[in-house]
Length: 244
Ligand code: ADP
Ligand code: 5GP
Image 1: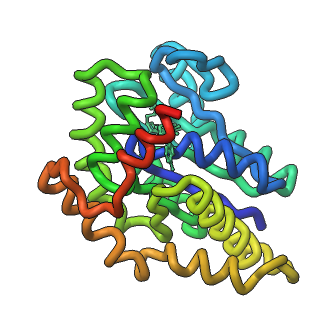
Image 2: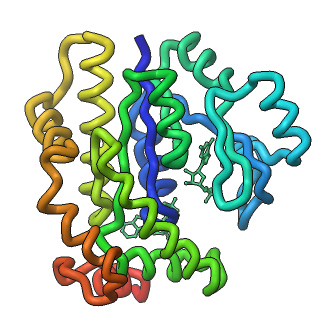
């Protein structure tokens, strides 16, 4: 049986960065390329980040029952094709879906065994810094993304694992641990290198074990606070790196 992983995160948390790193080091993992009606951004290519289609094309696919799930996100349609699941099953690969909270709920209804992972930024201040530093969005879009993030993160408790993306290398290791231990649990395979360490890492990211870590992050968003209880931190450290 293959394992389906659902990854959701507020925009700017570092989901694309993490997914791209993990695809380099975890073999046998298919990444679902979604369909969307939003126009391409920056250096995005059709068929790589998304399949970019018109609204009538998307609606025709909905009528054909081509989607495992689809949702309206920020006024555009986004959907996961049924065929990606069939292909992954055919190849015996696990499947990673990068979808929003609504999509995650729909997939969970259809595939109750799917493993849900929510990526959180270390706090509001760091998220703001990352969105600005990424240099993709205008100021009004950044402000909208921050407001949306404040709503989205309240859904973290619907997920099985919470990954706080503070230091990138650490987050990649944690994500790898979740993927490999869940893959082993679902497939029943024996023998996992460094199993004790991987299981420990994955366990520390379980929803039940992250409350203390997550509370100050939630507080920073709820209070719209620019001064966070982060370690001396996120934005300062990242600003230092960006200057070098
Ligand atoms: P998302 O896909 O969630 O919208 P991105 O992967 O585009 O986010 O990341 C947003 C910005 O933050 C990018 O400029 C990326 O290089 C940077 N970033 C991602 N993860 C980290 C991290 N752990 N530490 C510092 N910067 C990060
Ligand atoms: P972006 O336009 O920034 O790439 O993505 C916006 C949001 O749409 C993100 O939260 C992303 O996870 C979500 N998304 C991308 N593809 C899909 C999909 O196929 N289904 C759903 N439900 N959401 C998606």
